Length: 256
Image (cartoon, rainbow, N blue to C red; front, side):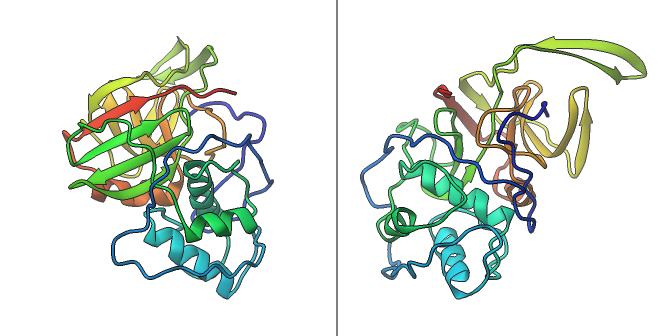
C-alpha cells in the first residue's frame, strides 16, 4: 500500500525472498515460556537454515513455529517466504534481530520460547494487538494466543500521490501513520480490493480506511500508507479467525 523502502523483500506463500535483510536486535519482550500446555519438549536439529533450504530440519522448524502460534505456511520442508516471515515474527518476539537465517540462537529460543508481550492485560479474551515497536500482530481468541504474525505498518513518511479514484484524477496526501489507540474491526472485502492508494488483499478494516491486509511486499521496516500489511498466506487465514466487532489495540512506536 506504499512505496518500497530499502531492504524490502517480496514474500509469497511459496516464494523465496529475493534478498536477505537484517534488522537491529530488539529487546526481550517477555520472560515466561510460550510453549503451549501439553506440548512435547522440542529438540532443535541445530542445522543452519537459509531461504531455499529443504529437508527434515526445515519441516521440524515449520512444525515448531506452527505449534507456537506462528504461521509458516504449508509444512512441506521447503524454506520459502511464508516460513521466513514466521521466523522473523518469532525472532522479534524473542528479542533477536530478525534475519532470514536460522542458526544457534534461534534454535535455542525455539527450545525455550518467550511469549509475546501483552499490550492490554485487561483486554477482552478475543482481541487483536498490534505492536508497532516490534512490528508484530498477536491475535488472542478466548484468552489464548491464536496467531502471531510479522507485519509492516505505516512508514511515517509524508506522501502525496495522484490516482484515479471514482472516475476522477485526484491528489491524495497524508503522513503514512498507523495511529495508536483502541478500535474494532468493521467491514471487510474478499480477494483484491482497490483503494485510492493501491490494492489490498482480503482487507479487514478497523480504523476508518486503515485495515489489516495482505501485500506482496511486507518488509522488516514500516512501509505502508497507514494500513497493517500482512504476508499473503496470513491474510488468507485471518478473515476466518478475526470476526467483526473484535477489539483492536494498537500500541508502540517503531524506532529506526
